[in-house]
Amino acid sequence: MASVVAVIASTHHPFYYRASTATGEDRPPFADEWVSKITAFRETLTRARPDVLVMVGSDHFHQLWLDNMPQFLVGKAPFYDANWYNEEREFGLPKMLLKGQEDLSAHILRAGLDEGFDLAFSNELRIDHSVTCPIITLRPEADLPIVPIYTNIFAPPLPQPKRFVQLGKAIREIVESWPSHLRVAIIGTGHLSLELGGPRQFGPHGPDPEFDRKAVEWIATGDLERCLAEVTLDSLHSPGNATHGFMDFMLMMGVAGAGAKADYVDSLDLFHTMEAYFTWYPSGAPA
Amino acid sequence: MSKYLVDKFLYTVDRDPDLVERYRTAPRETVEWWEQSRANEVLNCHSGEASTWLRFTDSERAALIDHDHVALFELGAHPFLTLTLFIAMFERDHGPLEYQKAYGARLAHFSMPYPDIAT
Image (cartoon, rainbow over all chains, first blue to last red; front, side):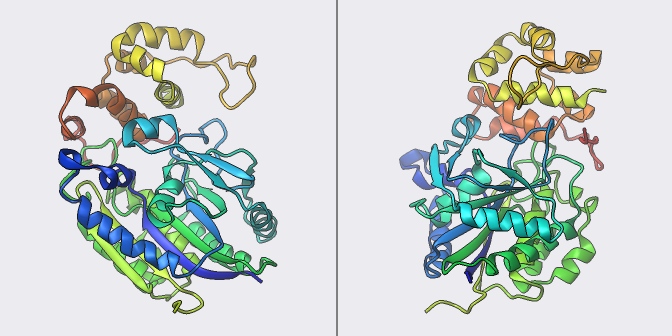
């Protein structure tokens, strides 16, 4: 069976690409520290020597729209074009082309449906920065085949937080039941406290540093019990109006498993939002 | 209320570079043209099919024509859509992050809970 060699949860910051490649006067003062932290984070994936990446993210009203909005969707295609005109315009993100791993997509869809998750699918999916940001930070060669999984954290009504956790747990079991010798890393990106288009946006820190502190603690210690006790669809409005993206972190806590302490934890307090990076090695830390 | 249609306007304009410029420079003409000829297009569908019932309320139409992102927030337009399109139109006239910070400051009178964005 396939082995899950790394579980990685991260924020996805669309400004990283531009900040890390800027030079001279255009280079922001925080860029060097950010690049240093990302370089160390990248090594946690490289060391696991993955063959395939399962990538959990959320479409930002690019391909998925309110006339036909899935809650959870699995891509099943041989290729995925990536990044959109408005991401190039606002963030300077490059157009990309990623390979797909269709056998694993098919396995996740079949097993997921059989486990009670009515997963939507797409045979022609153009992915956005929720998936390409972690490719840029963690695997800039963009050479590994992927299975993208999209969640709806964006367009209410949303699934409950516990459903994200349940799906994460199921994804872990399903990948481990894939009849393959390949080494799989499961990577998901979300947000800590975040405000977009509201009065608390683009402050000197994230809109709710206290939430961020608690969230990092929950994730780092695998404390799903406390996290699920405190986080509801209603409560997530308080830390910032885009904080429902935290549910993708909760999904990744489900992948890592209840009580699973992260093997690698780092964060970076930036303007606008806090960055956070976590890696678990379910089969033990690689040599 | 036709929050969905306001979101659809913001979404369809934002993804089209020509429409972004047209809405920036000629908002009334763009909003009226769009409501007349684009509002009922079924997106993510092959062409030639259309809905028959979608139109803005007067306050929604006015908020879009006035580039009034505060009114759009009040009406429950999706804040991500509004922000993304307005950055595309107006960030260029300001220094780094100046527009984004001013945009937030103009919303400072809103407290929790914010207007409902569910469609």
